[in-house]
Length: 335
Image (cartoon, rainbow, N blue to C red; front, side, top):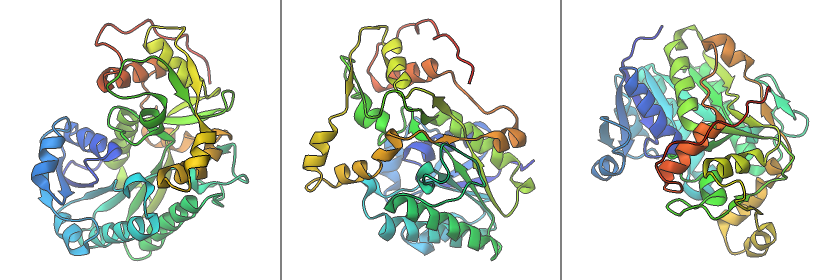
């Protein structure tokens, strides 16, 4: 088992980065985080816990190498905001993290997603499934993981943990928070962006962070380049997520509305975010499930919060439902 030491988290003010930082702190790790404005970051991230903020920019290689000095783990959770300029930002930031991992001897941990896969790998993908992506962003994601694979030949150890769509209070750019519900407002309806009977893969961030930290604890046993899939909250009928929101609100009659895709298409030439959403629409029309058997073989049962509990906690922290006792759990369904 890898003993807790120093972990550098790049992107600690983001969703998965913040959750991983919290989980590492809970396991006794000393957590260091990189930010261009450490004081601002410290004030805005009170829910994470006591971490050391250091000044620096993920786009500056010297800054990242300096921040990683003495670290045994680097978690790279930085993403270009609002899907902007992935090639111009995501690739250089990852290259800098790789350089920092080489300089410090740390294991580099990278959160992956299902963009990497195309129709020849669907509907259930495991770590050996072919990666022939259907989108531009998917191709960039494949390229990023190839960078990690090639870095292993240069002595850099890395771990990719792949998961579905994030949800949880610390996932501000997720489909859950930007489309399905409106943070800070009581629920009057739920918007569902996908085909109602098509399955969808979700990842509750506290569960995913726990799985990542458990993998970090055994990282010495892993190959120099390793990929592991997190099963997460798989719903066979995509609309079950909207139904879970309705159940958490205690209102079975809460309307489930369709996402206004026609409006998005009309406005897409003028709104970059809408163009990016259209590119990823295929994931709301096609079931892509992650096979987690490798993860279970490595760490035992996957951390898993029941869907209705995870949704209720997320809505409560987002201010969408009152902080009252949770409704009775939904009936369990064997998967």
